[in-house]
Image (cartoon, rainbow, N blue to C red; front, side):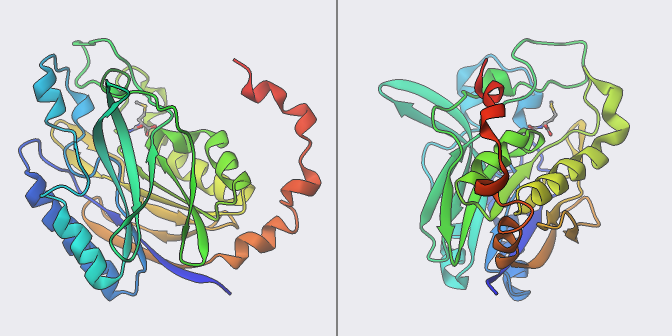
Length: 303
Ligand code: CDT
């Protein structure tokens, strides 16, 4: 067996005026709680360091950029990295990244994997950016990921953590089967993802009553169909004028949920994930090399 103790650190809402320092103190408390329960790795949500700012239309670039990090670790986040190293616990952290590439400014919705030594192991930038880029003042709040973030050129990666292979995704990515399959084909045994999902989608309310169902449906199906663990962690509960879905969970290669949050606030969930289960399934029903018929899949990569 290859057990890894994986925790999800769900977070309650983060107020717009909450400082990075205040948020990092919450993250460290969750990290310590998870460590006390035996966690080796803690998954935090998407955009963990601030409120979910794409809900507001902003025109002042300095105001927009105030929600982004230009370095990681920064002065504010270094205590989290130090706590990780002290406790020997790795973590996944979502944040807004402001960077420069070949002289051009880029804004990404980013997640990093930090090893048990407190060093960054890998970085992933959100591929599927949902919402809209235009101002919709008639709605109670916006979802302006298409305005504030760039689609990256780098896609889905897989990194070693302990004895296993780990991939990262972010929120809306979890609804797309390609996300998991690409990483599974690269060997991922665990996909970690954070999310901020309003329970009411103002421009598309037809599925509001099914948001919790769809959240688990996609992650459980992905775990089963790709013979992997899926760790989905919410920023949950009331956040400013929006209500965010909770339901943080760990889905196993069987498709079963083996850890589940029961609140919509700061809460640690934990499961012992035996990564050998992934290899077992991949030698049987989901033996990709033996059973996939790629000659029939071409349309998936066409525009
Ligand atoms: N953050 C994020 O990607 N949220 C979306 C909300 C629905 S589309 C506006 C999600 O897929 O959960």
